Amino acid sequence: KRLIDHIGLLWTMSSDSEQADAQPLCGRDAMRDVGAMTDAAIAIDDEGMIMAVGKSKELRGLIDGATEVVDAHQGFVCPGFIDPHTHLVHGGSREHELPLRLKGADYLDILRSGGGIMSTVSMTRERSERELYEQAHQSALRMRSFGVTTVEAKTGYGLNVLDELKQLRVAKALELSMALRFVHTAMPAHAVPTDRRGDRDQLIQELADMYVELHKQGAEFADVFVDEGAFSLEEGRYLLETAKNEGMKLKIHADELVALGGAELAAELGAVSADHLLAASDKGLLAMAEAGVIAVCLPGTSFYLQKQPARARFMMDEAKLGVAIATDYNPGSSPSENFSLTMSLALLTLRMTPEEVFVAATRNAACAINRGHMSGVLRPGRSADVVIFDAPNPEYVLTHYGVSHVSKVYVQGQLV
Ligand code: NIG
Ligand code: FE
Image 1: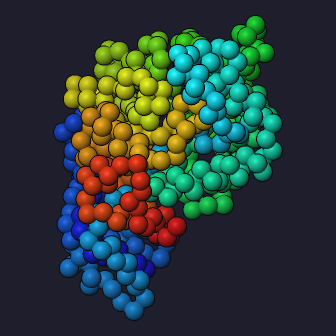
Image 2: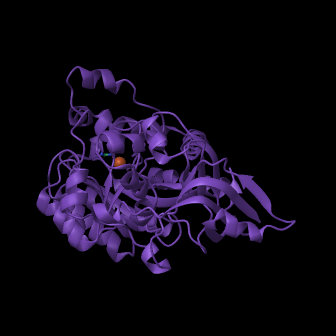
């Protein structure tokens, strides 16, 4: 048993009943409801589940000879962060692309000429499973050091069944070997392979079969890159419908570069989330809210690609969407595992309030990967995934940016 005591300020993200707490907070008013508590403590049982959350004075009564007391030193404490969109497993890096982009080449120009995603595909295919594991393990450790306790990991750098399955196996091996929660997503429709630009129908059919196979091997979600230079709206609809019929949950890389109608498609298919959304239309965002689709904003990606960020204020103020944030960690458009920096960029470039940023990084992010019942909220009965900061308040964490203020991270009650 453990008691995390002397918490100066606790944001539980819990606002209601067990059932309501499993749902995202939608719109600006709800997203500012962080369940704040001062002079607080969290009691954790032997299984790593939360027994009680409350005032320190009251919870100290639970201490007995078997209780380990953890001193939070009057710091700020919140639920472990959820990174609901990453391309964690891949080979190599792409630092050579930045000078090209600074000279005026577009992200899509680089992809069309066989670079971009396709160069990571080559490097990922070449690497052994062991090598991919080592690289992804380093990244996963970095993520966790910033307080991330759950990570979503996509395939999408194999693009053929053997290499897609290899990527999935690496993510599953990481899940088994480390104290970090994983959610697995199949994304074989991430780019059109350079040598497959002729036989489109055949390619789409093979991709559809890959979703089915990846689902059998443990991928819970299906994701498609619907955009100019990638897959069309019709292709996205066909692939995602196939995946849905297999029982997969859906995500879309939607309207990142061009407004193709990815947001509308996410609403039509009842996707769990639509991500990126830099170019999404008002109509598409309103349809998403209507259908209960979560908007996952990726402020690190718009920053690194030097594009206008997603319209998070419209999403929260007008469309009343539930907004989550993620790193989109990948070698081309967001080469950083630093979730803390992502949160600061959400504050500074998406113009979210500190409350909205933390809700987007915890409760809403958990809902964006179908873990609303498990993670993202601190309340009795939930897993004790907790971050203790060496900082007095969340505003300090966000504004003293680019560095880690994490003091301790617990995953299911275990110090990592
Ligand atoms: O989410 N937009 C497509 N896919 C990734 C980038 C992948 C890459 O450039 O390697 C993204 O930004
Ligand atoms: Fe992505």
